[in-house]
Length: 286
Image 1 (cartoon, rainbow, N blue to C red):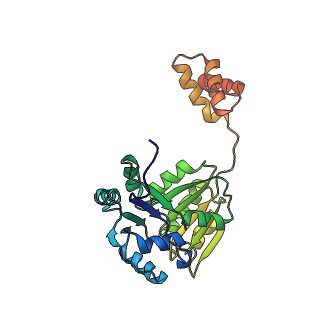
Image 2 (cartoon, rainbow, N blue to C red):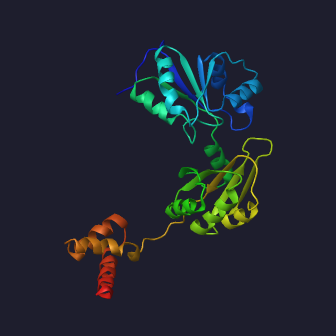
């Protein structure tokens, strides 16, 4: 369904807030902080602190809106927008819904045909990418690194062959261990950057190999942390990587040459090499 609503209808505004320097607050954010009927904030104290730094009086009804109560608040915020109110949604820093509350609300609003718009602004992900010096033409945001070492190792193992630049959030207390596990799974020489306290007084960007960064951060760091990791280098596909796929198809009844041709078309590995590798492995297994 195409979104449509009249100008007089209420609306939900998902707004980015500064990730550090209050001067990065956009004019539209300032205006909405002054005029919104309801402000749903991840942390109401941080909202009021930001408003104080911006010298903006808050007259709206302020509601706590965080991971633990988002589901319960959704109906209230949707009803307010339906009643013609302007509902402003903000997180502690950066864009709501990006590793912050708001996704469920936006999804429900779309399903219920309640108007939603975005007030763009600061983003730790894009800021870290821009300042990292690591390729930005293709990237993926991987959110917060898992807390437990075993979980981190499993996640990073899956991402080891990811060719796009990757961006992670992490705790300052765990960042040393996270970088060490990345070095094990991605390779010690993989280039990365640790971005700390972006746009704040003590902003710092440390770039180097994962091994070097893990040693540097071994004792932990302070502040908000974003890690940018370069993608895996391109590797020519090998017959050994896909020979089992050929054999699975052959065992299911497909002729070996046809199976090799099918896998070749999907992977780019030469059909003849796949066919010969599959025959050799089948002979070994007999």
